[in-house]
Length: 545
Picture 1 (tube, rainbow, N blue to C red):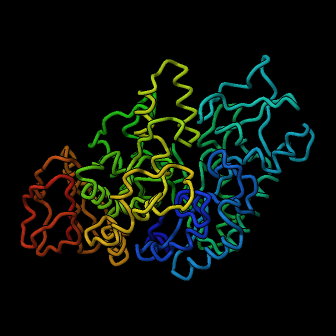
Picture 2: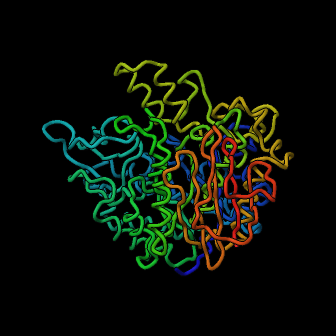
Picture 3: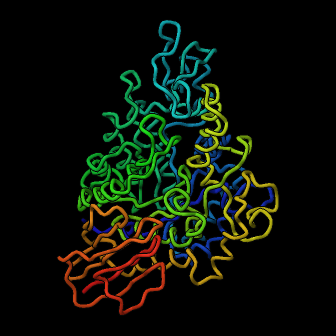
């Protein structure tokens, strides 16, 4: 496989609302990101994935765009955006934009025009259907609860929305829509951005009359056309959000021969503890052996034919240290363990803001303190159907999206140094103990551990390009694997659980010398690795020769 810059990069996701506010209005902004670029440079990341900053009524925190070529006033101006791109570039950091083209806001000019009449030139930019037997065109449901169809009084038709009714889906079968989108993408590429993260991109090939939403038959031809008309002409990173991807599907997206995307986000490992019926709202205990199997499958099956994204967290997922680690007694050890496990795999690592200091989930007492449209809709929907308040709060505490969206904890001053005003979402009360300042002052902090992981990846081709092999597949506490390149081997050993675990080195691993690359506990250099008693959440990585 031809080497690309993004194979060796580490991406840091910024959720701008919650990153740093410089105006005192309680909402993070572009100038706040510019102010903190030195911090990100110190961490060592190469790419910032910026969640949407386009003009938007913020029904879904910017994933409902009303103007793709303007900046939301609460985030700043286009001049601020240009400055951010330039300032980041000066530090060797590229900016990738969040591309939301499955749908727009209902306040987008296209939709405002489209709903005026059936013969409006923009009508066919969206998906409209006549009522069927006086009701909905079909029974497709919205991801945010309720039906995916909204009746429009003025023209007597329904329009289609897979998300909020204020997020009408674009009609990708209309060549004019595609042309407008490619022009918009080129506008940003010409500004010098480093690529796109593509929101729910697997939905653009939908065929609503056949009830096909994800992975529709037209998806890949559309992506190939998009590549040819826009980013394929630039040396950029493109990553698609694809909830339903299997390794076979992921190869279709990311095999370089096919001219589609650099990589995709697949979520198979992140949905292992979801209930079959209720999904993330009724999580079941993690099947650890299944996690090993799934992560390993993606490592081996994409090898040479596609590329992995490596992540535990993003703006839609709960904090991993609260989910699969221990965010209290072993917060530091378990956060480092989870980072070790992921960062030595093949693929491009993504760090979500606050992950590098071990930020945790939050528990607000009242649903009124939550902002996330998905959580709020789900709460009221289920309460109507007989669920109790306590049941619903427990579900939201575990898996609600606001867990990831609480403001960044910069220091121990009021509002964690995020804003001098009233924050748009309450700061996690643990900010006095968990904050950036504290992490920077402590050599043993999670921050410096992440910095070391990033540096190791930069300095060792074996981490980027080596072969992967899972060890001790049936062990129910230990996740161990090797990476091999030429005559070198890296051995990764982690105890995934809170109790101690015994590690026995498989007999077929031969070596003359060993070097400890990183560990989350003190380790004696001369200690043999044949039999190890691992402490709770212990992680070690050795270079073997």
